[in-house]
Amino acid sequence: MKILFVSDIHGCLPTLQQVLGFYDREHYDMLCILGDILNYGPRNRIPEGIDPKGIVELLNERKDSIVAVRGNCDAEVDQMLLEFPMMADYALVVDGTQRFFLTHGHVYNEQNRPTLKHDIFICGHTHLWKLEATEQGDVVCNLGSITFPKGGNEPTFATYDDGVLRVRRMDGTVLQELVKKTNF
Image (cartoon, rainbow, N blue to C red; front, side):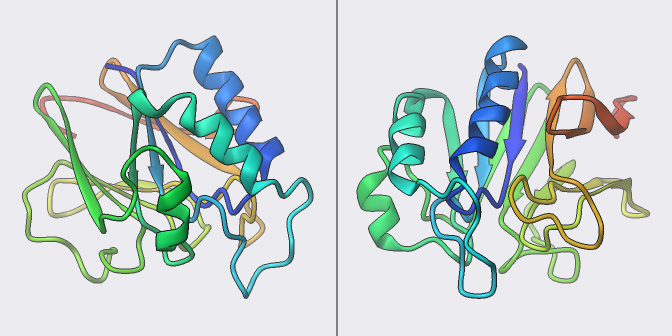
């Protein structure tokens, strides 16, 4: 299965369109959205290209291939507009032997890890991308943000296919990757 992971869209339609263009060109099977979908949040500037209604329309067209979790800027009113569930604090996605624990990062994060067994912990929230194998034997992937990257980082998203987890720039080029061995 080919999975594309994105987080912290914050209502910016042009950046989401760019990611979905890559999704379509590369024929991904599942889109996992890790929160902060429509609202830009009180601590962020208003993003250029903000269009929550346009995002709703674009994502609802793909509702049958989306797994989403709630971010700290998401609300029940967002769920009223989106035609796929997105209010859970986490989701577990399984591909073969790989268990992906998906969360935004404001409830579960590197300092507050879930007890549910997983191979790959994927989050967002900090807007700082990261991809590394841990001493506990799993992998941590923070997706960064496609709209408001922090710490001098560029906008990023991640993909998983053929046992390879990759953090990518908006044009799809790879910043870092981890290749599956038996388990990461």
